[in-house]
Length: 310
Ligand code: GDP
Image 1 (cartoon, protein in one colour):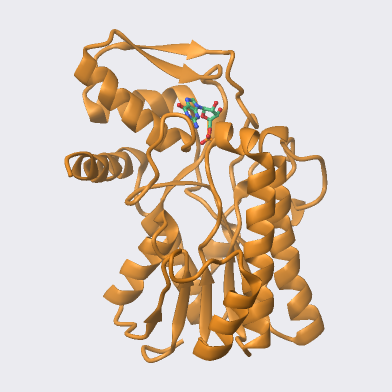
Image 2 (cartoon, protein in one colour):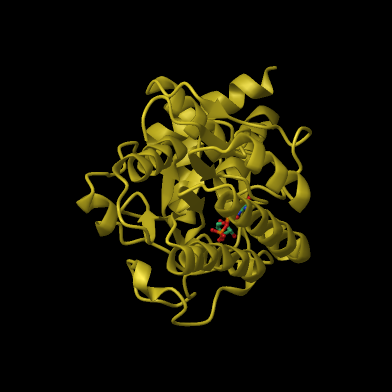
């Protein structure tokens, strides 16, 4: 990949895609190809194939997906599996037909079996049953990995898959019901502070453990994988350590300046008990996370405030 290469970022308005866009621009990549949802509907096979055939990008970053937190995954099960399957199939097949040799597919740590040993190695994929709350989404992401692997095996392409842990950061989606736990709790804690509430309600028991990665750290890992042309395969990208949801809530309360206490709504699901990724493959390539949790939450909160005030 050189500074003149034509790089297509699918999903450049999302949290991951926009982080890739910012970082690639900052590194001097000049030829970035992007399309908004209005300009290109990624669920439309004909439109996607035509676009890729005409534009012929050299590299494709696949950051477009239907995503959401535990409630959204569990509720909009059909939308999550359908939209992700069709977007992946359209882009990966279209890219191959357009002669794209290098593509990066973004998956998720929820692809691994619910009860697999921790930290989770890439080789644990498909060794056991999945967590139920996000099984349709996970199946669609496993299909994406297998699409990449199959095109590589049959056609000799070099499509690589990245499995990020729970992400948060600039341009996240803030919604009390549908978003992931970090943006949901940032918003809820902020609003609780403004109202002068005494307690913050956190879903589940607070005991599940999660690993959180600031999205800029992920973007750096993706660009490194594309620049280094490492052999294809699956690469876990995580922070290397995890916290309980209760500890996360306490960190967010501290950053937001909320003085109350936490209460747990156990009518809401916990989801998987733990999903800490083994990141040794990425470490061997010279990558590791640099943004710690309190620092990252502070940056995300500032981004939330900037958007909330607009
Ligand atoms: P998951 O990692 O796929 O389970 O997705 P989430 O980021 O949505 O949730 C992570 C954990 O945080 C789960 O155990 C949730 O029950 C818990 N959690 C606590 N409060 C909230 C909340 O307000 N929103 C969300 N999405 N999760 C919450």
